[in-house]
Image (cartoon, rainbow, N blue to C red):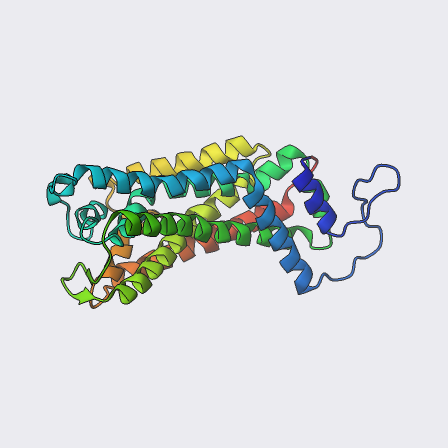
Length: 315
């Protein structure tokens, strides 16, 4: 058990045995935990997650991607040419790239479009897949379960931690993009996809909205990863399965012959965030995306709860 895990177990308020210092099983009926205790458990879980070297490395890679994209665009356009010849379908991720040289805020949209299909969901898959299985594999899960919160509250803390990490990972990409874009390219009024020009302040608000939509787009795969994590005691197996599912689903979403199932695949509407950069905003696919992610949360969240509450914890 790592020092961070020992601290977290201690924070749960579980009594220790006199001789071993390990958490002792409660023999009396425990008092009902207060909401503040549940909040402390969430804070502890989030702190432990963010302190892990693996998490810091993954966030560092996400922060590096916009920097590399910005430098690549800057180098390619240093002779006055346009990036990629200025091509790209309207509303598609690559269409943002030619606009970066005109306004650095487009680096935010381009970086989110570049990381959303693979990098962001893979990072989320690693964190979600390790949430329960990693604890079981390291031997800390049994100690956490003797805390007064019980299995349901522990699973809820894991779920909210994973959801919070979706937002954190997305904001890391967005903030790195914004800083890099401001340093390498000019900033100013922004011409939206629909051709209407808005002020930089409004564009910044839309960029924040895009980041929120991207974070919400990841909650489906995060919940699936959490469910997979309840099926095994191997963190590596859970992470590999979740990441493999991301790749497989992305491939399925590109096969025209499978168009009938495309609307039910969690990544199908991911790039619909581009509709927030229109005036008026196109809400149809945005709402479909949020509804689909909510469906995945409901189905796989319930499955994770049913599995975890009945799981035989021996490690």
